[in-house]
Image (tube, rainbow, N blue to C red; front, side):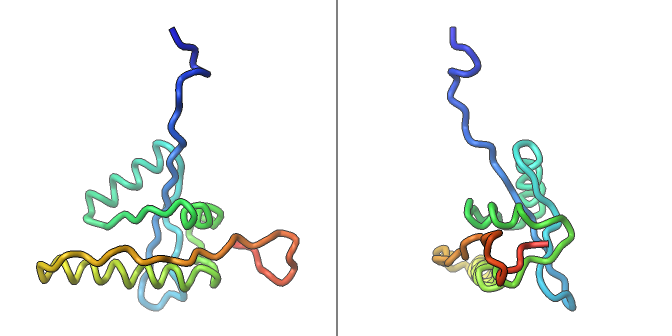
Length: 122
């Protein structure tokens, strides 16, 4: 019999949901969580037909942003690349073409708390 501390555990999953509406400056973090909450976020997205992209690095950065806050300017480029890719996936599905391969996104390193010139996420 194995004790609980001997049972291999899978890492706790994290998930972040973004939303963007015309007229807003940038996408906002509208949901985030770990474990069961992350699983629920992913399930709701799947039920709504929203594509779920997996990127541990990006999720890690987005988890530091408070709910209902816009993403910081340092993430604009990578989120724009992701949104463009998702647009191409939707277009390919409508036209019956194969979906494009995932972009190679350059995730910016997290800002250092010791660097006074880099604003930290609010």
